[in-house]
Image 1 (spheres, one colour):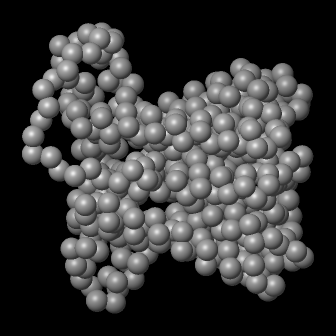
Image 2 (cartoon, rainbow, N blue to C red):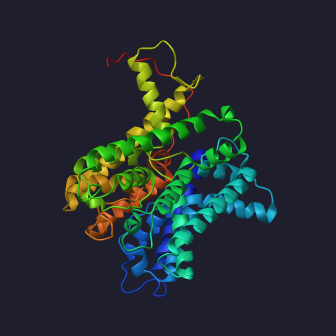
Image 3 (cartoon, one colour):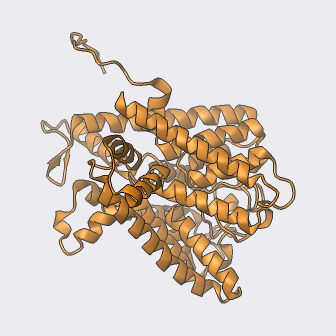
Length: 442
């Protein structure tokens, strides 16, 4: 029951932060013109869940204070509000009780209860990486903007990218930088670092001279990230190479650059350098597989997670080979309870997505493929969208009910499907007996 208590507390915390953020964004000093509360709530949910779907222009419909609040919600959502609370407590009284340690462990998917030092290192890594990213992006933006504006744009996009949020202050996304190698590569590496997960980043840093000391989790994350990025590049290049509305008019180098940018963003973040509404249906469909996979456990990104998918693939291969050995990777056995959890996450995720698609297809008047794309983007906290013909997401054209469904998906994706499912179904009571085995033919 302890785990269920912490999951519920974390969930209620995120909901509270989203509502407070929506109320603040609704204040006249935070927005320009009219702003419906459902749109303020959607924006707050998208920022806190580090998704990036937008139903109102961040730069055109919010004041500087509004943009600052959105950025604050992104940082809170990316690091995790429980992590920030724990860090605050550490600096005040230097010691945590067992409940606070367990809450931190649950919030960040940590392997143990040694959370104090880990939390401090998280804060250092986050601020350091975001600082470097902000410097590089500010220098790039100086070509088009005065220093104060370039600095704000650099800070905003660095934090948004590292936290895999995908929020942008440009009215055309990053389309104006589709040929700017430094800007796109910087954004990509910020996204990748944020998507690897804090545990992986810290382990890579501490064992940078001894790669053989990396844990199985870190190895899977590194190899999995590289494979998915390259696979995405090959897929999008093969489908969109001659599409005049996407890659067709670009030079050979720019095609490779933008395919890399697209592949990175389709798994975890919502930036775009091309018009995503012009992608072919086959690209939209296969991209949902990348979005569902997501990035790393304990990272700023959502999705089912690379390790979850990797475990299930390995298990399937062992079963098909009818091996007499238990599934293993890197000469390490995979526990059955881990396999069971991976299976539960994948089935639950698929059910949530398909159920949401069914509801939205029947209540919103849009093509199936576009709704599927939007739903998976929300659930995977990715933030890419086929759009409304402008810079806004397709969700902007949904009614209040449709937007509410997307909000629920974004929260579920940020919290994690396993934790969200635990809230919905509750935890089973411990039983001290076993039923006899039933023979089932499959």
